[in-house]
Amino acid sequence: MTEAAAPELEVEPAAAATLFGDRLELARSFTNELARRGEELGLIGPLELPRLWTRHILNSGLLAPLLEARGRVADVGSGAGLPGLVLAIARPDVQFTLIEPMERRVDWLNAEVQRLPLDNVTVVRARAEDVSDDIVVDQVTARAVSALSKLIPLTVPLVRSGGQLILMKGARIEEEIEKARKVILRKRLSDVEVLELGDGVVEETTRVFRATVD
Image (cartoon, rainbow, N blue to C red; front, side, top):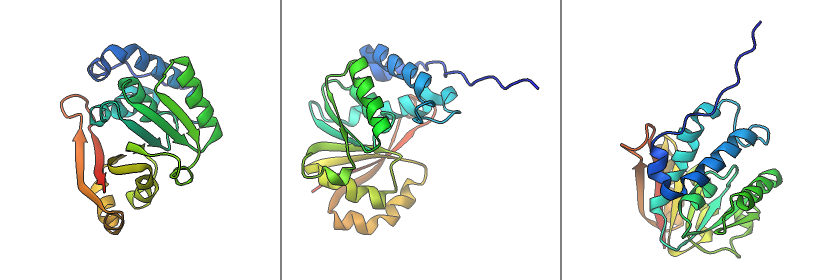
């Protein structure tokens, strides 16, 4: 029986140049390293290589224009660096704190910060709820961490008054918002909205929950 061919890394989409501009070489380097070591380290699944650019790198990079100039951002549950490291590549003017509890993922994040190198990133090994007294930022990002009803209470304490939550969600985002209504009221979030990013730029748009912390 012939063995199935190993999946190959997706060809870089043209939209990568649009999203990353003069930072494209860094984005390529990160993507190639994630493709090379991601499955081995448990960062991505074995079937992700053919859609790594589209589903993960570009998907994360679409958030870059939402970040405040020269702001401070905490990325909760950074994992493979999605979206935190991708955004740090795209927005060198923004200071990022990547919060991740798992040691092997922290080791990966630190190694990439040094290898690329990125001087606008600090990696913290912790759970978000354990660092809320130490970290105050302008915006918080998160991707594929948990449902909004659980994620909002974890992220709000990290954000200054007037700052924002920018949380990447899937197709069932409206359902999640409905289930999180009481939490949204209790945490006094305002300007709650759903953004769909990437229309006309990428094949698969990205849905984002954005809200202001009062």
